[in-house]
Image (cartoon, rainbow, N blue to C red):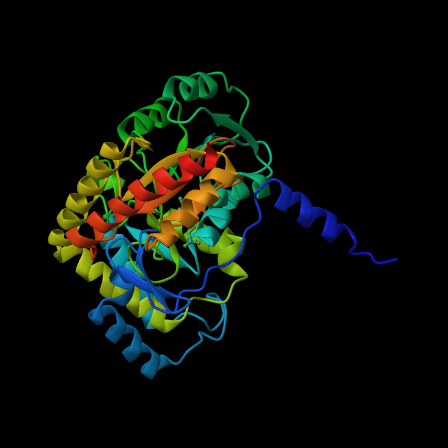
Length: 393
Ligand SMILES: *Cc1c(COP(=O)(O)O)cnc(C)c1O
């Protein structure tokens, strides 16, 4: 009579589907080469696209903040957890994103669930791209609003759904700008036009675009020149910025409202000073060092060209994410382990992160990769493709 007997059943069901997930331990930071189990691998699976999580200037800023403020923030933002550093980072983000104001959360996940839930509720309708990140989907679920999912990047479909919506109190269109598992890009000017035409709120998630797209690296809103037309710009400090946290940038009124209504802001301990200081330093580097971004683009192009020659299928991507389509979970897991045998660490991505039958190796390139890393990685993909197809036959 054990009330947790069902755990065995559930776990074996997950294993049978080839969907069991385990953790891989790195003994190093997010550097081009990492150590796993005492062995060296080329890291091709990091979201620290600019390598800033280990940048000396970023580490120094975090260390100095640790010395001055200590480890933890000691409270939620609305109680004792706001410091001058929080304000400084929020002002810095607003300037970076060219908005009036910004608010920082402990993570991008929390920024999304809190903001979607604050903006829409019962009687409202949210229009959401079918490949949006889980944090957006969860925010939609928590909001109590009706959710209409439109086909990925199908703005004709979206326009049809929005124009048919007559009774909603408020309407919110929400999308990733760079999609996390495909690396492709939403058409922001088109989304602005639709949202303006029908009086919808528009919220974009710049998690994988921040630091990567735009001349100053501030994201897809800058890339498309629509900073003034996107009222709610979300982003993370956890990916290219190299630290941890999330933000919303927008009008002063919007930010005041979110501070008052986003539950994941109100009921969460505020992010710690070292993380904030690291983000501040990293944003400074992102803005001044366009070189990093052009080197990153060069490495991405080199990797794509190499993979295309191997006959493997790459999904069309416009970012530092290069998804190599494999298919079924077992094959993807085999492919990832063949890559490991050939000195490359890139995890396989399986459902629920991607649709069934679309398992992939999600390679991500960093600005700290050099030509030699990319060349060895391509060779490893070639060898892995050969050994996996031999084993499957
Ligand atoms: C990673 C990610 C998030 C969550 O951000 P965290 O800071 O990791 O919590 C939100 N949206 C997208 C598209 C992401 O890829």
